[in-house]
Image (cartoon, rainbow, N blue to C red; front, side, top):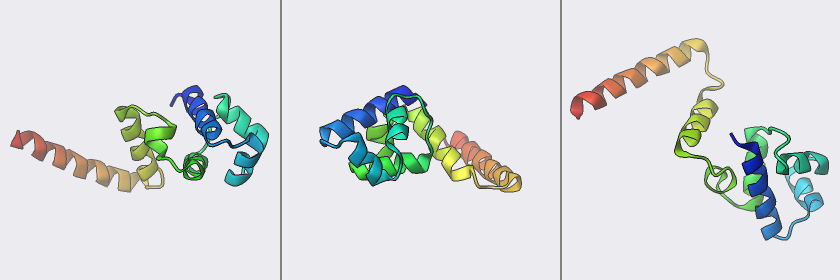
Length: 108
C-alpha cells in the first residue's frame, strides 16, 4: 500500500470536515503525533486503525481512504480474511478455490 497517498487522503478528508488533528486523534483513540506520522506517510498502521479513521470520517475504507487499485483491494481483503486461518484451513481454501477456478474455466 502507498502510505503517503493514504496519509494525504486522511489529511484531506479530515480538513474537509474541519477537524483538527487533536480532535480527530482523540475521536479515533490515537495520539496526535501518531496521527501526524500517518498523515505524512511515515507510519504504517493497522487495518483496525484505518477502519476507525474511515468510520470517524464516515467514508468507505477502500474506496475513499486508501484509493486502492482493484488488485490492492483484492489483496487486502484476502489478507484480512485469511490471516487468522491455520495452514490446514488455508490449504483447504486453496483446494476449493482451485476447483471453482477449474469449473469457471471449463464453462467459458
